[in-house]
Amino acid sequence: MTMSSRRQFLQSSLLATGALALPRTMVAGNTIANGAAGGRVVSTWDFGVGANAAAWPVLARGGSALDAVEAGARWAEADLCNSTVGHCGYPDRDGVLTLDASIMDGDGRCGAVGAIEDIEHPVSVARAVMEKTPHVLLVADGAQQFAVSQGFEKKPLLTDDARKAWREWLKTSEYRPKMNVERTGTPGDAHDHDTLGILSLDAHGKLAGACTTSGMAWKLHGRVGDSPIIGAGLYADNEVGAATASGVGEEMIRNAASFLVVELMREGRSPTEACREAIERVVHKRPAASKTLQVCFLAIDKHGEVGAYALHPGFVYAMHDATPGPHDKLIAAASIYGGNVVR
Ligand code: ASP
Image (cartoon, rainbow, N blue to C red; front, side, top):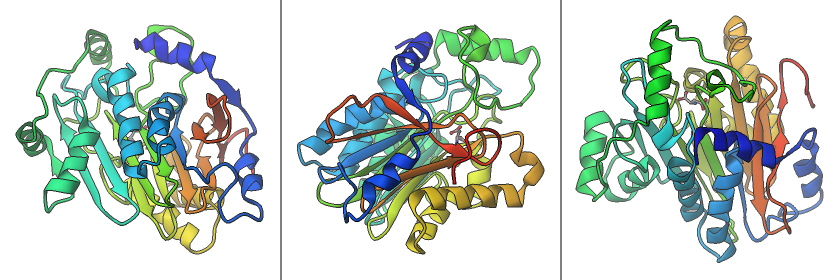
């Protein structure tokens, strides 16, 4: 898919604005949320529709949530050409594309890679870290060496489009992350950060999640965001639920945010309430900064109820389960600032 395909992809998806209340009414009185008995997968952003479509067949044949989220993340890394995830991602300020990814299941098994170069499927390397090493996180050269030792091919990933965008950026060299960019179709409207965060509950009642991203475009070389930090960009616990994040990752790391969302659900908050409270924590810590940057959370509990919340309007997520389609509807999350505040 080309960069403009992401736009077309979004345009062909139906935006279900104000649909936030749906997951909550779906669970009323049920142990398993309506439609979630055969499993459910949810993913961040418009490209979450495609990731869910890649993950769903795994769940539909009775496969594990872990396999499902890996399949969804791999789709986003390779098949979707997108300026913020995988091989079409924008590089750092030195023109180097570095990728971050993590994977975790609800039993507490997890693996991650940070700032890995020239490897197309960081989420699968993260899974190999989880399954084949005594460690959780490998970074940079070490992560790449490990990937090659496991049979992953090393190949240059930076696309011509991304190189062109970097050369353009060099003219000002300003690090000013954009928030909820309008999709106008002009070259300057490309997103400079977003993550595929994918969460799944399988038919056996097990949870898993994965994150994959090229991080913040024009970041300092060596910068690692929240996505490969377990507890910041991703957390899962079969006893409670799972959470993931997108937006400026430094805020998630400061607040151990995905862990916070899961712990708030453990205390009895619904997924939406937990996400909202975590967003409020971000605002409380840095009120001025929170007005200029985007932070978004997506969560699913052990019953399959789903919720989300963002700092600013514009965050959407996709959901896929056994309910008859269409499954290309995007659900708009409520936000603390501006517009669609739902409480
Ligand atoms: N959280 C990612 C990072 O900071 C970027 C994003 O999801 O917008 O690397």
